[in-house]
Length: 305
Image 1 (cartoon, one colour):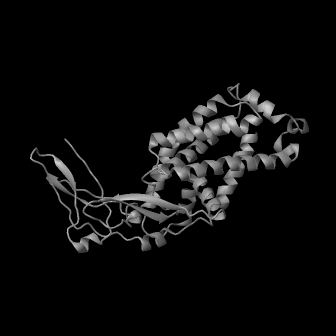
Image 2 (cartoon, helix red, strand yellow; image 1 turned 30 degrees about the vertical axis):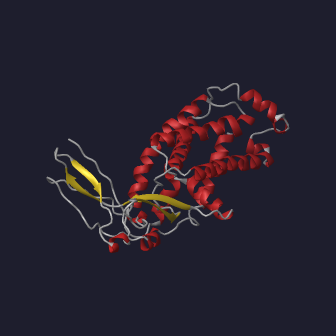
Image 3 (spheres, one colour; image 1 turned 45 degrees about the vertical axis):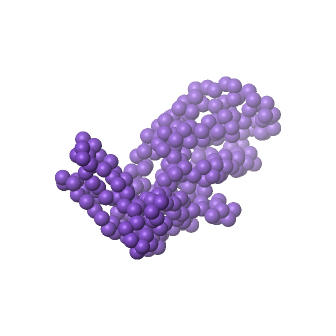
């Protein structure tokens, strides 16, 4: 029951977060325009195309020089921003602090609530919590929570942990382990002060959560590719699939943290054919002084048969 109230409270938080974090994708696009590729080559019918919006929004690459064709750009956080291309460890640490902090805020609310709401008797509230925690963390059990709690709510929250890791630049395997870490912090941390860690929650939350999170990736990418301003429904879906990002941004604003997303980009490349008949991807270095001052977004593609 305690898990139900905790998760319901967080659901209410991210629902409230929809309006203040609905940064317009149209504004982001208007500031970051993509210069067209100056060289496009075709080899035996091979064509290379790119996603129109996800790439366009990160197109503020730095100047190209003879010695450097990989650059870093920083864009403001928004619902429609692309995933970061390199792991943001400071951001992941901050997300973890916010998540654990929200756990304790909910615990505090339940503690001062009447027994009819929290389900905790006065005797339970006045027990030795640290002694209980030490005992509980040694005895993980197969819990008897309702089906929807174990196999609907927990996979959903596992997917939000997974999505947060992906948005912060982690690989899919890295995002899975980030989700597993968040689940373990909850089971062996906050919740262990009141009940024993759940074996199936430690498995289901990151496991099923990662599978659901991969599906959410396709939904989120589809929304981000759409032209024009996002509708309220699009913004709501982006928040529902990443509530921790939306809430975390509000905390960042509260604590005056400058949340900007780091995107690594490279100069565009021209496809050529080697003496062995293989398609090669060679970076276009500075062609002229004027070209050096243009902003580009490069995509590296390798194909072999």
